[in-house]
Amino acid sequence: MKAMILAAGFGKRLGELTKSKPKPLLKIKGKPLIDYHIEKLISAGFETIAINTHYLGSQISDHVIDIFGQKVEILISHENELLGTGGGIKKAISSFGGEDIVVINSDIYSDLDYRYFLNFSSDTLFVVPANQTGSGDFFVKEKLVSLEGKKNYTWTGFSIIAKETLNQNEASSFHYWHDCLKKLANNKKLNAEILDINWYDVGNAETLKKLNN
Image 1 (tube, helix red, strand yellow):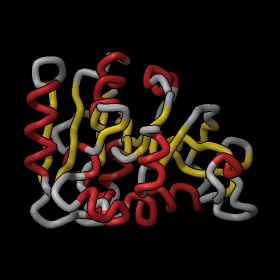
Image 2: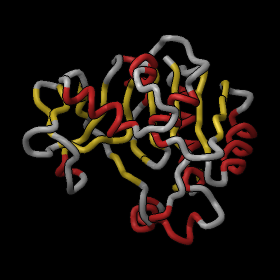
Image 3: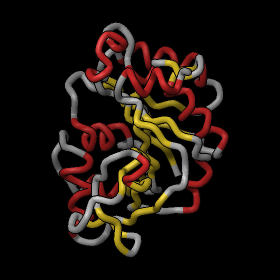
């Protein structure tokens, strides 16, 4: 199993904090967000990590290669034009074989041990109860993601996807959820694994401040 970290976004909701620094390099307790993900992946035994970049991408690539380049294979996939989350993953993992890929949003923070991913296969979303986040994304029934019913679970930004699932979309630019995962859910083929963890979406200054207190 290989890994992919999504790190191409602008981080606009963080305002001035991301004016000159990309969101994955913002620090929690003195350490850049992306470092937590890479360290956990290395500890879990992952040997190859793909990372897509766009906004201030050279800052991210320079940092991760300098800190982790001797510890794990880092594949940087820079997007001159944003390809959407789905297109970004598809491009970044183009050199991967047929094994499953763990996909991680770089702007999340949790206490999950990434060895946990090794117990699962594609195509799986990892979710937390909506009462933990205040709002839900979808309904989970019999361990499957459903687009019907009360939105009682929130996607954590962790998923396991098969390369062939992404390649079914012939476009070079597309959205991971709307154009890929949602189709799986409609066909009752998207598994849901419920996590019991401390989890945060570091998408705004308030959450970042809270985690640094």
